[in-house]
Each structure stands twice: as C-alpha cells, then as structure tokens.
Length: 188
Length: 188
Image (cartoon, rainbow over all chains, first blue to last red):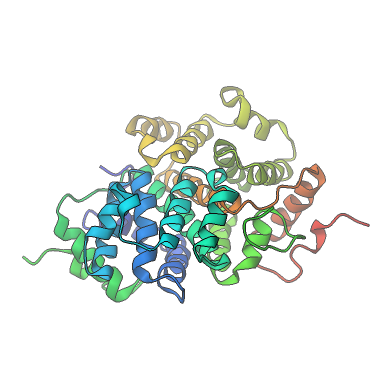
C-alpha cells in the first residue's frame, strides 16, 4: 500500500506524477529531452540506460517499465535482458557497453565514475555529450527509483501492464497529455 | 579535472547547468518549486533535507553548498552541523527529525522507507504532502549528487565560495537569471 493516498488506477510512477502536477511537469520535461530529444544515442539505447540503473536500484516497477520500453523500441527482448544479467555478452556496441558501465557506476555513486572508464568510453567513440547525457540519465533514474519506492507505490505483476505502458512511452513519450493513461487498463 | 569540458569559472553544479541549458531548465524549475515554492516546511528545513542527502552521498560540493544555504536561511550553523553529525540532538522538531530520517533512508534506497517510519512522522504531525515532498527532495538531490560527482566537477575548498553561493540561493533561488554567478568570484 502506498505511503500516501494515490489513485489506485495509476500504479508506480503514474500515480505519483498525478499526485503533484506542478513537480511532475519539469520531471516529465527533463525525461522527454533526455530520452526522446535529439541525440546520437537511439531511443532504445537511452531506455537501456534507464533499465540498468533501475535494475541496479532494484526498483521493480521502473525496471519492468523501461525493459518493456527498450524491448518495444528495439523490436526484441534479448538486449535488455542481457544488459541487466550478462552485460559482457549483450549485443550492443563497445561504446554502449562502456556507457552502460558509466551508468551502473553513477547509480552506485557518482564518485565511482573513474577517469579510466571515461577514457575507455571515449576511445570507443563516445562524445562528451553522450557521456554527459549518460550520467544525467543515470542520475534522473536514481531520482525516479527513489520516488517510486520511497513512497511505496504499487508494482503491478501483470507483464501486459508494462507492455501497455511501453506502448504509451513509445507513441507519446514522456510529456503530459490528455487521457494519457486510458490505455493502461486492460480491455474489459 | 572534470570528465567533460566545463567553464572553469563555474565549479560544481554551476558549470554543469551551464553546459546543457535545455536540461538545466527543468532541473532548476523542479528545485525552485520544491525548495522555494509554497510549503508548510520552511526554506531552511528544506535545505536541511538537501544537506543530509548530499552528506549521505558524500557529495562534498552539494553538502557544502546546502549546508551554507541552510545556515544563511536559519541564521545559525548548529542545526545543519547537527543534522549531519548528531541528528538525535539536532535542534529541530520531532516531525523534522522523522522527515530527515525519511530523507536519509530514501538516499540509501527508496525501499528503506518503512511504514513504521512513515507512521512515526505522521504521528509527529507530518502531512501527506510533507512526506511526499521530503521523498522527492531526497530523490532530487540523489540526482544532483550523481550529476556533480559522476562528471567529476570541481569542488572548491574555500568556504567563502559556498557562502557567496548560499547568498545567491537565498536571494535569487534556483531559477536561471542574467549574470547569476557574477557574485561567485571573490573580489579582486
């Protein structure tokens, strides 16, 4: 049960973003810029960063949601599974392997991001902006994970819930929109 | 040395917020709403939440900056010092002691915020919104701390730097403004 009264039809982050709309707006805008704005990283790659950070923080809602978002954007499920559980063998570029490692270390503590790790990423082709955005996406999901779990929001167990949410995130992104979550409910 | 090229006159978070202005704006707006917007928590109390989270993450820049901001808002230095190092004896209300403990646990992991801790805070007078805002401020500074340290931004050692920054945060808040950091440089 959530620590504060949230709309029971809106589990996880969705009810929290509905609880206080004025704080939700800049959180949504920041996420839209970082995960859907112009970038040399694909939307799928950026969802993988969100996935490994949420997985590191053991935030089940966020891990399930961004795994599903990465899956729908990449068109397969192997990559998200491997970056969480077998990163060395994940079918991503060497640059992405280093960026995902930067994200994992940022999740633990920013001080864990060493000059060596940065140099490896850069040698594999990562730009300054990609390094910046990787750290900031990892920092943003360190916020989300704590917001979702710190208020004990509900974590659905039905995989279809996350597939429906991923569809919304693919089609509509992260900005507020009318009837945004209408499709979250299963057909009755 | 920072991991990416930042304005060397803008240490800590200041150079990062100047590096990518489009992502900086919603971060600043969220901070302004949470730390300076209407609230039943004082600005000083909210800076104490930022302080204990930054201290828990061992982010020296953020700890120094928000300790200085709390000091200037509270008009004394004892409270910020005690909430970091001797929280049981900090001269804050029982409600604030519990809210600060919620913030400390959120910093470690959102799952650490137990129903018992929430009930104690509520019994001491904390409202749902105060509990929500405490968790979200703690989550936001978990973002800031990782952003600042994950990119190895510079941490000034001169205490006067943080006093000048605290003066800006007290007078101007967190939104962008022209020549915002002109007063950061020491008089020559």
